[in-house]
Length: 189
Image 1 (cartoon, rainbow, N blue to C red):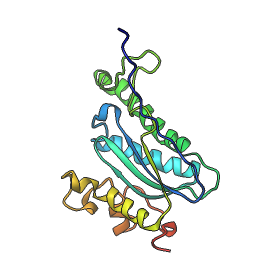
Image 2 (image 1 turned 90 degrees about the vertical axis):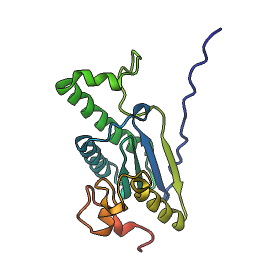
Image 3 (image 1 turned 45 degrees about the vertical axis):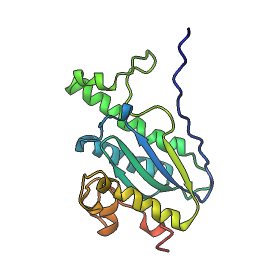
């Protein structure tokens, strides 16, 4: 009997002008590739570069050991969330592969897929999670959810103490890893 191919989750994206997006993307096999500050810095740098390239506003983020959450708002009427994510994720994956090849070749096996065309993966295949947000209350709830992720997991006693979250930046601007675009946040306008 032929083996059924694995079901791959797909994510339908709606690039609707004016909508915010709550994005979640996970590391390959939910492994804790974001548990080191070095890798988290790469992600922060990739987000900053993607923001400059694609012009989105960053309202919130948190980097967990095996996944990341972003709350963004693309102000331009023409945008593509898949291009934003591609800019962020490819940069981090490339840097991780380069680092492992140079400094820890045996570590590559944790990223190994067993596939010819794509022998290594840093991120899970598929679209991750993308939720369009159109209501003000939902934006605030999404930001609270993102910020409280480390608290729920026991990684920090309060959201502002998790170094890799925008909670600290919202509390004291200029103290977070990445600045947030608070001036465009709808609950503050």
